[in-house]
Length: 121
Image (cartoon, rainbow, N blue to C red; front, side, top):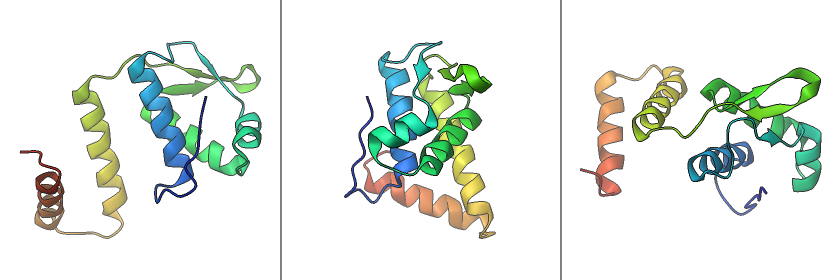
């Protein structure tokens, strides 16, 4: 169900988050789908349980999953619209850059440059 690219520069927990989000978008995961336990997924992927726990925490924060104690972890959100996903990504960017206290203009300039490099007008 999940795979990890050990050669990727993307952190492992983010790879898990992306795969869950993509699974929701693609309809592979529907509301109520049960995800593997933290320990079970960690064992399957041969990674530290803390890495899976971090991914699950991020996914809960984003509203895609919910953990119900011993009952398990479940998909709780349906397919996101592009606008919802964009808004979530923007909020995440703000949280990440806040610690550096950059000027607003500097943040916007970096985002504009990244968009331009990817051909997004």
